[in-house]
Image (cartoon, rainbow, N blue to C red; front, side, top):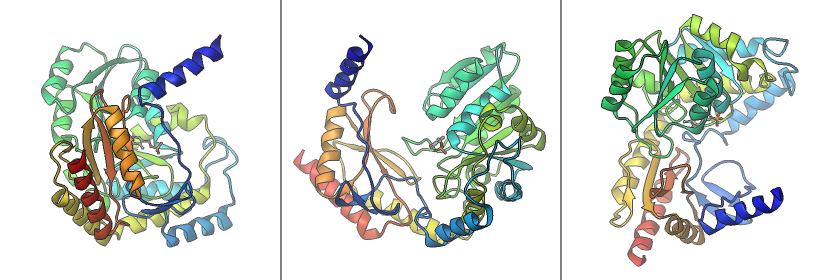
Length: 386
Ligand SMILES: *Cc1c(COP(=O)(O)O)cnc(C)c1O
């Protein structure tokens, strides 16, 4: 029976410490959260600049709703595209230094739309093994040959490119890896893309707003520009709202507008969101103090943590993972932190490779030094007792 099988599959998730639980928050997004009736200090969100709960942004959203109503009414190419969407796209393109941008409803949709629009059967996609799930799914939807190279291994990528006889090639990578916090070697990737005449698609979900001058992202930080780079940034993380965008050479963006099925065949995102996002980009651009505070907190955490058994990974971004290894052990550790009023997610396979279960600490500009010290001291103490 189908249902019996499904029940057995669920029981197996429990047996392997792989069942995930969903918690309900009763407060605005921020470090101090009321969660399932408890007051917690949270290190979970991707709200790196602390904008999701920013009153000025909530005000902009209300203003947007008063001006534009609640919904768009149709897909962008029918009648669901508004002048405020144009204004947002122009602002985003200029902000990241590209000719044109296209606004998508979510990052998952952007990624699963871009790859099939650019390549197909008979082509090849070269993907970092640790890329986000949406890029993996996008590659599968494209039906191109998929080569997954070892994480940030440029020699392996070069060999795979050299061996390929595909008509068209596309390299795709996260900039900041979401479960490791490290940053892809973008300059080396662009050199390989040029040498082997490939597209280079970069997913800056965790870099946009955080990295580079004024938070312009990983591309601006690396000082790179090329018609062959297709830049994807998301707007639900540091930008504090929702959505995503793809930026690049004008013809590339026009092609994506024509051919991305996740753009063409979906209702346009509410124009009120675009209005709020314009305010968010202003806050990002003028957010130097927020980024400086965040950088100080990252330094403080790395200084205060004194772990031996568990391993703090090398990372200069707000994503600071502590590798524990075993699934059950990481679940017990997250539970012990929870009991101390600290909420840090335990990340297990298949999100990360087997044997590398970890705590994923994420810091935001809304945290205080005291918050970070409390986390570090509690973790140090728990390791001593383990
Ligand atoms: C979050 C994330 C996405 C998906 O973006 P959403 O807007 O949340 O759908 C894509 N890529 C990476 C690397 C991400 O971390």
